[in-house]
Amino acid sequence: MKILIVDDEPISLASLGDMISMLRFEPVMCKDAEEALKRCSETYYPVIITDVCMPGIDGLEFLERIKKSKGTSSSDVIIITGHGEMETAVKALRLGAYDFLKKPLDARELAAVVERSAEHQALLFENRDLSQCCDRRILEATLDLQRDLEDAREQLRKITGVGNIVVSSPCMRQILNDARLYHKNTDVPVLIEGETGTGKEIVARLIHHGEDDFKAPFVDINCSAISENLFESELFGYEAGAFTGSDRKGSKGKLEAAGKGSVFLDEIGELPLHIQPKLLRVLEDRTFYRVGGIKKMPLEARIICATNCNLEEMVEEGTFRRDLYHRLKIGYFTILPLRQRKEDIGPLTQLFLADESKAKKKRFKTVSKAALDMLRAYPWKGNVRELKNVIERAVLVYDDDELRTEHLEFLAVKPGANMGWRPSCNLFDLSDLTLPDEPFDLDEFLNDLKRQIVIKAVGRFDNNKTQAAGFLNWDRNKIYRLMDG
Image (spheres, rainbow, N blue to C red):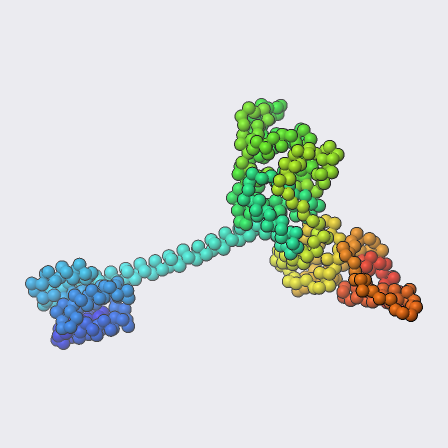
């Protein structure tokens, strides 16, 4: 360990240096405080021994500067004072001196003070090291915890489906914006209509969770899966002894169990007719009774309903109450089938491909244009759920960098089969059609036009005539004959 010695008297400075060397420390000697301050700005000295009476900057001013400097404030400064300078020694201690020695110096006393100071510096160094190590470990643990928390949130998003919302179509963007709006209004009931597999539950969960709220419970009920005679107790709960076979302590219903979260009534069109007026009363009063109970229970949860039925038609048929239908329709969503919002097929395909490739440790990263065209041409009667299953099957069977049409051959439609899809607009703009002045053979012209269309379709599907036939809703043999002709 280096010890800095400051004294303007050469003999005293040399003597101190010899004593420090005998204690097996390395002395660094300075003839005045200015030189010592310069050295301290370049190197850290754990222990500094300085005389008080020096020309220029005296020992007390030197001590004060050392203690005020960030780089040297932790150094132990030992002050050397003459006889009768006790007041100076006290002032030095108040300024932060570690200890003081009186002249003439006693070698044993100097050794004891220096050894004690060295031990103090060793403890300070160990403490700094432990503190830095502790800070480093706390930082690492905090970063690990943040990563784990984000991973947990990501997993929760995937489990709830909220993390799988990727859209491009204007209609779905509007639905997502409205869902975030309804998230802030818990007392507004919401009705979601759409075909099976369009993502009604995912929208319901987005209404419940918002951007990143996973604290409140999401209680889902499939109305088609509950026995009609058990529906009331399942929804509202029951008191002890309310019916034969009931729990002796009673039981909470789904409305009560949801607390301040959400109750999702899936397949609301299957809600028993005798329960419908009771649900209407709950929505209007925001209170309910348990079965067999006399105490009003407050409804704190949000009610979200979904159906693949046409409730308006059911109202006209008398199988669904008109007043309940209009009450549920305060917050209303209609999710179009995937075949009517083809802009979403590309982003959804990429999302499902990335998720499945990661889960199954495959290489798939991109989708070829031909494969994407093929997916867009498919009718998707099972909607988003069917698309997800198709991508999962392709990734399970194949392993490649790019998803291509050959990986989707199981989607190929049988020759002559009707895919159930027609263009929503005219294929050709005939507004500027001009007939020639001379007579022409219409059949020959149409055959040539067909040939050009078939060639383009076959090229789109990488020369796969079976897929081109499905795309054109034609028999594959007709394609061969037309191209050969």
